Image 1: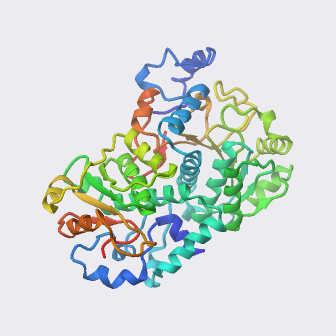
Image 2: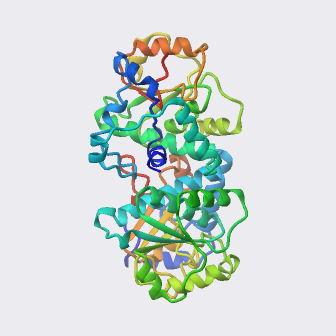
Length: 264
Length: 223
């Protein structure tokens, strides 16, 4: 089930040039990616048909993202400095997932610091922020533009800035500048759902954009994950009922035991 | 802080006043305090098992447990939904550690989840859903349902995942023993006070006669 590699690339290229919709060259039962429209539809199904709450889903995704970090960077192998994690959060849902992720990383005994410059006013974000503040997770008031300072201060960075369908220009100057700095990072980078700044469908800007070492796809991988060439790709979708996976003709590797993430 | 971590990690608090009775109950839940020490839970929470074995675990009184809850809601702005999801997930994980599907007779293993009228019942609904995702075959008995969106939504999630809801509780322990390999008691939690009303009084009597294991969420519900 490798997503990267020469064998898949030609098929994906032809799929990417067509509009959002099932890839005809991928047999229905073997689909491994969702288009942006399908990802939104899957989320709507969970919210409207299954009556999941948004807060519930964000909590499950953020918790699973933190678990993925523990798998990619197990704590016993890390020095004190390597346990420090910078979590960069945008103002939309991806950022909310980042806030939950930071809190669970704290519980898992990593040392997160959050950069959340453009704050959403909605209640979910505000409560998640309070939870982090109350757990003594520091919030940076600015992010150095000199990437070497970040490389020296932290062991890894979590990118929770942009999710699928959110335009980079929507998130404001500080986030945009942060992304420009993160492109030059030499410490490991973990992107939640999609690498921020990548086109969720085509993965364009994947050459010039962020190059995460770890991608944690939320619920199911998005099309641009085909262009991901980092070390680890996890899917955090244990909570997605089987019927929903079937409805979207998704076939993903099974989860073992009580794991909430699976390595692809 | 460690107490909060315990809540977030496990969702299981044991009320101090109940401890004596747990050890003398013949139908005592197997996932009681004894197995916290040696087992390392791996639902992402890392426990130092040496610390757990050597230092006494602090058990909370009912008042303390309520105070922890209040702090989480009022100071930390957690929502009931959030905590309930974490608690139910943690309970399902704990149950899966104690009774892994491979150790059970049936495939998938059958589990009866009995949900009470309050938040403990809500924890049970979340737990049942995650048990289904973990490969069990849960059935729920949920006789008294609060008319609040939180609970109706959790019921919908279970129904949409084809988890059956029993119309009535089997009245004979032997019937339950035959149909289910494990029973999850999510009837009453730490905030329960007062007399046990029907149908729960009868349900608890039936549970006392079971031979299959019972896993109690938060506290054993018997009186």
